[in-house]
Length: 292
Image (tube, rainbow, N blue to C red; front, side):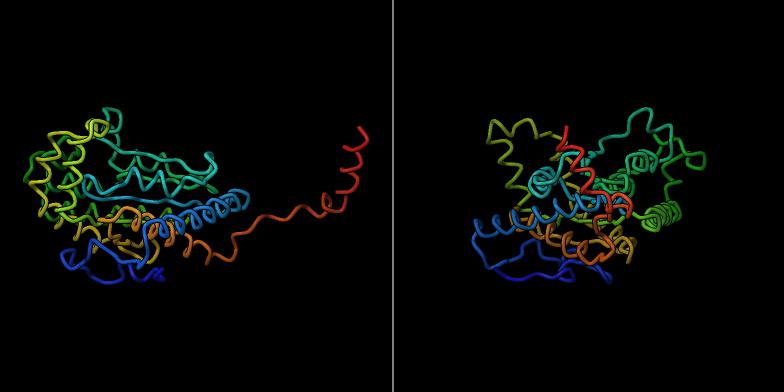
């Protein structure tokens, strides 16, 4: 199978999404790709156990992509071998009444992963510069004092919001959170096929909403907003990775491999050693238990 590197997908300079492929040939059969994924996710699961004992770093995994880009199934397959206590998934929908009474980052901040754990954001704080940018009238629901009409949601507004997001990520990175941001890059034709499957398969019908078709008509606008968001916010401490997702098995393997390859570079992540006093008395503890 073809070897891949982090830099094959990492955004380190300005990108043009139309030039980013939605496919990637791993030069392997699907069964081989799935086998390699199983191997990597087991290593990730073991690494998370070590990180939990170590208690120094948290990991935040951000997944963004158009409808049907495969976020749910990717989460299921990549994190399957994790201890259930070691990973927490949050799916962000339309803000609730309580969430709208706080600033837009509040609902994301309060569910950040604790040290030793992985947190997965299925849709993320970037919804606040994507969906709201495509539909600026949504911003009025946030009741921001300086925003009274849609005309107030101008370039200066978005500049400030991007700066706030960059500061948010810089803050949590400096305090021990390792950030992965994956843009699941789906072709418009493949989205069409997946939407049709939702309609054709009875067990998939529940996933379909007529709103999906309305948003699909805004495809180009969304692509422009994604491109701008990625280019403005891919930083060394919180890089974006563009993941080709027309083939789901390939996408899952790439995401898992990137995370593992980066995390294993942290040489300080290791299980803590026992206190010298405890270590010196291990045999006594064993004898006490054996003599019960």
